[in-house]
Image (cartoon, rainbow over all chains, first blue to last red; front, side):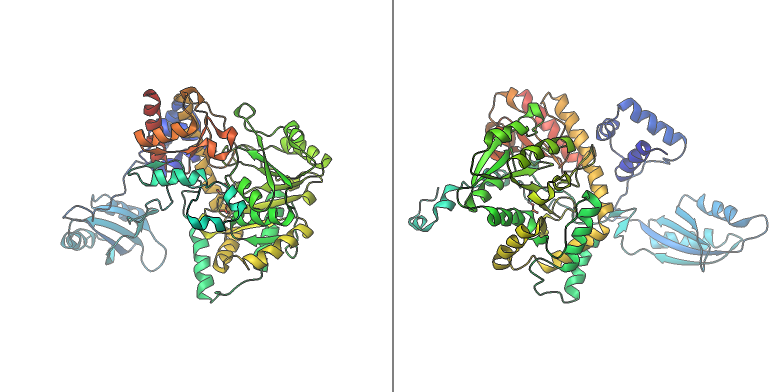
Length: 164
Length: 390
Ligand SMILES: Cc1ncc(COP(=O)(O)O)c(C=O)c1O
């Protein structure tokens, strides 16, 4: 990856909604070049997607529930961690799956509308997978920071309007 | 001017200086709602967290007392290392560095330490608003030398020659400059250095924006051959480390002058705030990465703004540093005051009128791009719309 590509990625990592024209002007390159780089990085799957980070606790009644589940797995012959992980990450409720070092094997993050819904997923879908030995579910009570973004309102400009 | 009866007690000096033009415009701008401000001469970042933590730590450890007058020795040692590492100039932490309450105080100390009544100081304009008044307050006489957009606001050595009289003692330089963003290259400095040496002048070099240069490696004035011992270098933490509110700066220079400055500092200020000094120490030791990140962001936004101004046909040289652009608004036929005032009234965008930075700033406005991309884009749209109505 060259430095122009890296600079562009850093810009859209912070704000995925930046217009191509804005990116081009910020970087001092042409719009055409910006488009080409974006297409290339998308094709190479360096850019996997563009998503918004949303505070669902604001203004919605349902308010999504997020849980982190520590999963212990028996790595069976011919199955390994990858296959089990795949079975888990195919469920649409699952937001993230990581293979971990330490006392458990997979860290699974899932989102549901209610705690009951998350509970059902764990008891009916996750724990019934053959190689899953045990699960420990942690509900997230409050999000302070996620993907580098702080979940608070306290970011107004504290500078005076005109200063030397 | 003040007219109440008590004004008779005021000194002639203080009566002779005008309140800052920025101040008046501030009152106007802050009385309005929904203003997008490009009038802010300070970073839009908050101070990096590790630096803030260092000040908490300082307080938790009970450092609530004065420090040495010249500043914490640890901090001075680190400033010395920093000056060597970044700019290749060597200063002794014991005798040649004083930690001050902002670069502002360092400027004041420098002028008071060297000026006798009536001695002249060449002030390169457009300049930071404090230079001329602090010269006057120190008993000196500011002699403005104008620079122009045609020269990218670079001082020409002949201009110094022309301004010199037998009273000239000091020349004040600022690179990158506030408000023009102009950076003097090594070559520019060498040419200025010749005149400075020839006329045996002292230089006060305000390098507070030195970390924020975008195109060429920075040359510090005292790094130019033979110039170290006739230069008082002024710098601080406000701009590069996003620490304007901490009020911390420093001066470096030849021992005799710095010790004289220290004398004034010890009687008038005692020392800079202790927790801010601990924070500054952290900034120097571990802050460079943040500086680079912030600078990268300013560089991108400079590009955005220059592009936008170009598209709307406001001519503007490309500033090599700081976070200001200083476009000419002459083609609108408005004075910089009329332009800034009408823009504020019609489109709620605050810019600073160029004339507050000296006569040669007239016909320009200062726009700071230390503001979010979103606000910058909106401000540029509004300025464009404003131009269409003229
Ligand atoms: C050129 C210049 N020098 C000095 C200062 C003051 O800096 P400090 O906050 O360190 O007093 C400023 C602030 O705007 C400036 O632009």
